[in-house]
Length: 195
Image (cartoon, rainbow, N blue to C red; front, side, top):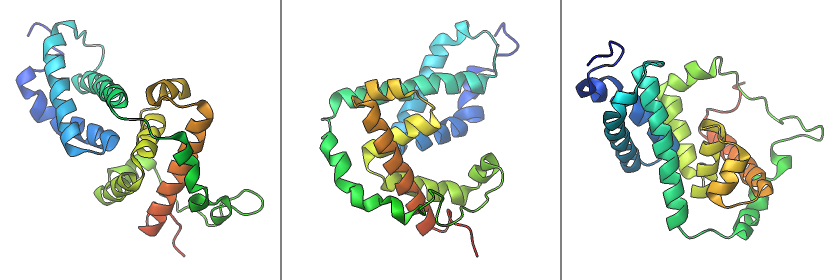
């Protein structure tokens, strides 16, 4: 390799494979799909390595490619899967009643535990396992919307286009996803402050 910043591509899987897989699995919630997008990412990176300018680390560059592969997968699945009826989204209103979580002043009924630095907390495998179980328990479209908005930080406009829903539906579904996650985390001992 002429570029001293570029690692030998034969070492990419050993050096970055686990990080790429964890990144993909957290967003896709499917081990097989995560493996496939990581493989696609490495193939694309290999084909594009001549265009790598060294402005970022190899891992950052690979994760950037991986993000695009994940979005491509979301687009492909949205085209291939039949759309769920937007009416189904409002069918579970009583499941996440506001009064279950908030008092009359709009504050949380129970204090959320202080997890300290969220990035440090997420590194703990037990919390990751609980979060993954809770994400898996969400309906597929709610889980995907939550990942796109909160983890991948996609704009509302992008989410509307990708999922073919209105902005109002985005916020309603996002609210339900958050409440579902909160309820699941609470049930698994990861969400509420301990007395």
